[in-house]
Length: 403
Image (cartoon, rainbow, N blue to C red; front, side, top):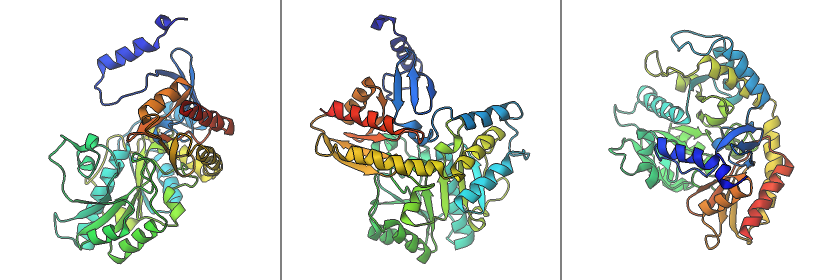
């Protein structure tokens, strides 16, 4: 088979011709997948070390999740929230218990969950805290990534996400990530919430210093401020616990969830909080045509049942230790630093050797799919069904391209 016989170049050309160029994908066209592996249109196999930015925590086509989707497709797919369907309570009850919260508000995408959290926090601030109308403030961290809607990019510090999309939505203060003193100085009587990622994924899998989130929790308690944890990418087993914030021994007032909640099958997101917070919403004040639809709830409920066993959290913790041990051996040999928890790592490649983009391109040539971010950093986040052999293979390929 020659290069001229391959389907990949033609498929890539079609994609380039018919789509807006808001992504810069690797030259791989995936046609099939199972577990932690994908196959392209030419029959080449790749180890998926990105897992759809954690949307595929349970691997491609997890049999239990696919079965739940198939069963629901044969019965009912959409009703709208004008009616109640028979999957809704099961999903919401299970997720509320998993989060240890009273209520759940289902949506579709992660950005929708963030937007919902912002609206709820503001309404809570006006109705419960007593902030003057139109004066609510939410504190966020620099380097954040919470989505790409107009409101969310208004408090982004990433020029690619923010520039030329103004005018921007007011009501946000940005402080350095991990700087508790700066956060404390930003709090005013009009502060209604602090919105943070327990681990900043897009920024390079960054974890603040020990004690930071305990300090955030105390600061919020002392000032009657909601602590919102964006666990859309870090949650649902990725770091070795159900939620990444658990590593800090902290419980937020509100969880923002998404990605893995849809099992890699359908977009599912949710906000989870207690009744004194989510209860501020009344009929007609917030909603979504597809949010909490029967298909989404059937898959989401199956995801919750998988997580309730603790199996995937344990796998992430155990295999994550192996991954970080192997990656640590590369520090000083083409790698400057490694960060992360569980099956999630940010790897800083020596820029004298490779950019991040060059590194992931060379990894793809060797059968491993990963994603670069911010110069010479690459992100590694395999599905939680990955095996020890898979991990050893991936790290061996990284070692080879650095050599």
